[in-house]
Image (spheres, rainbow, N blue to C red):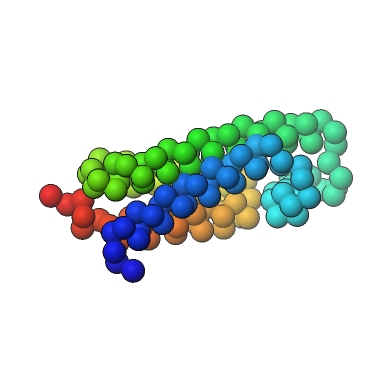
Length: 144
């Protein structure tokens, strides 16, 4: 599993997954699947009642739409990055992935901890794992 091509494709698939998830979140945040997996785990941190007020639902549709679009954009960049500059072993691509992953993880996770949204901390940790493992195993290919 230490093969560079394996890890490059792994990152490409993570990027594609993020695009699909982001678009689904953007356009179907109130669907049954998202309600079951996502909304229930986040809503209980901010609303006592199981039924959200109408204005909260409207805000949720908007904020999850924006969040989903950002995730889809991030996934698109990650997939592109994995497809070309990472595959051709351009050093800046590896460095950029490490730096952007650190900035995202620490900022997002700190805000989630501060807000008591530990479900998001768990999701962040899973995504971090999916990104860091290939970065660790490919580091040697970017050292000159």
